[in-house]
Length: 617
Image (cartoon, rainbow, N blue to C red; front, side, top):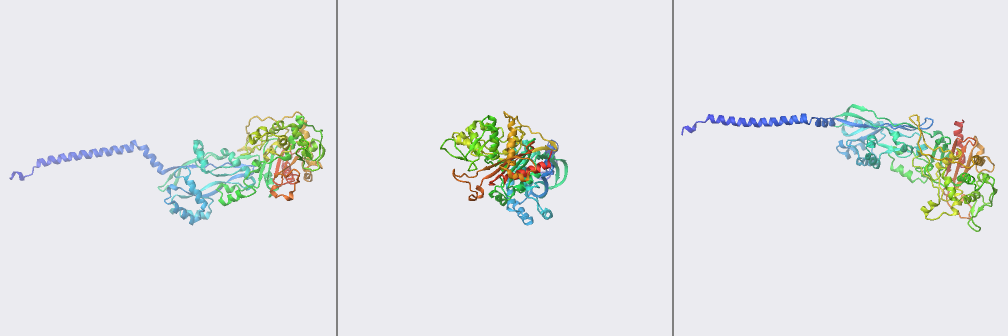
C-alpha cells in the first residue's frame, strides 16, 4: 500500500523528455515550413511581388502629343492649340460618384450635358484609373474652389491641356473642319489596330472633318509617357522618368486667308460658294461655303441647343456647298460644249444658225426655249458664248450626241472628284446612256442631250468641279490636280497621283479662240458679264450661268416677283485671269441670285483683283 504512494520520477522524466522531443520536432517542422515559405516569397516570388509593389506605387501615364498647327500660304495661323483647364475624375478612386458630382455641381456648377457626356465616357472602352473629363474650360475662380476642397474630393483633379482653337471661326469652317472628342465607334476602330491604340493612348480628340480629318495622321504626333510615384490615395508625388511626346507636324495650305475672308465679305448674307484655284500649280486658293458655323463649338462638345439651331437652320450652315453642293452648271457648261463640238468638227467658228427664240427636234414637237424670248437672230459660236445663246448649243449638242459629249466633258473632271486631298468632296453627275439605264431603267433620249447642251437636265456639278474644269481650260488642257496641302514643317509637299491625260485638241488654236470668246463675255457691250467693266483692273475671261430651281411651263415666262426667294434661279459664274496668261480660275455660285452678271460675277472679279494685285508677276 505504501509502495504505490510514491511517484515514479524516472517515468515522469521519460514522459517529459518524449513530449519535449515531439514538441521540438513539431516546432522545427513549423519553423522549417515558415523558413521555406519566407524563402519562397523572398527569393522565388521576389520579382512578382516587387512588380506588384512597384505597380501600386508607380504608375505609367501616357502624354498626349501637341497637335500640329495649320497655316495659310502666307504663314497666317488658321488652327492653333490654346491652353485650357479641365476637371477630371478617376472613377476607380471615387468612393461615391453621384455624391461627388453633386458636390462639384454645388461648388462650380456641372451642366446636365456635362454630366450626361461624362456618364457616357465611363462606358467607353478605356484603361483602368484613366482620368475622365467632367467639365472643361474652368475659370481661375473655379480652379481655386476645387483646389481648396481637394482633400474632400478623392479621385478629382484639375488638368491643364491644349485644346484646338480656330481664330477665324466660320470663315474656314468647312475647309478646315474641326477636331472633336473620340466617340465610341472611333474608339473601337482605334482599339482594333494596336499601333493606333498606342498612338491614341493619351488622346481625347481626333479630326472629324475637312483638313483636320484628311491630315489626321500628320497632325496628331506620337505619344510620350511619364513614370510617376503615387501615394496610397493615388495622387502623384513625383515624376521618376519621362519620355516627351513627339508633336504633330505643322502643315501649310495653299489657301490664301485674305481671299477666303474676301469671299466671305462679298457673299454677305447670301447662300452660295466661292472656289479659286491657282492655274499653274492647282493650289486651291479659296474654298468657301456660305453660311458657315463656328467650329470651336464642336471641339469640346457642342450643346444640344447650339447643335439643334445649326441643324434646323433653313440656310443649312453645316452643309459644305463648295465641295458637296451639286447644281446644274447651266450656261457655264457652254464653253466646254462649244470647245468639244468645234474640235469634233460638228461646228466651226464661222458657221451660223438662226435663233428664232426656240428649238425643235422635230416639226410640231416640243419647244426648247431660249432665255431671250425673241431669239438672237443669226449667231456663230463666238456670239453664242458672248450672249449665251441657248439655241446654238441645243443644236450642236444634238448634232454631236451624248456618246461624244460625255467622254469629252469627262476629260475636264466632270462626274469625278479630281481633287487630291479635299475631304469628302462629291463627284457631281455626268449623265450618259449607261447611267440612265441603271438609274431609271430607261433609254437616253435626244431631248436629254439637248438639255445637257445648256448644262440643264440631269447634269450636276459642284463649285469645286466647275473651278477645276475652268482652271484646266485656262491652262489649255494641261492638268494640275487641285490640292490644299502646300508644305509639312516648312518642306514643300508633293502629292502622288496616277497618270491623268491632258486634254489635247485637234486644233490648238481653238483654245485661243475660246479664250477670246470668253473674254468678250466681259469686255463686249453685248456680253452677259459686261457689268464688270466698271471695275476692270485685269482682263477677265468668263461665262455666266443661270440654273433653274423650279420648272416653269413651256409657254410660261419666268417671273421673279411671283416666286418665293428660294425658288428663284441660281446664279453661276466661271472665270480666269489674266486672259493672255491665266494665273487664277474662280467659280462662284449664288443660290437664288438670278442675274449672274450682277451677283456672282462681281464676287469673282473681287477675288481676281485681290489675288493679281498681290501677285502681279
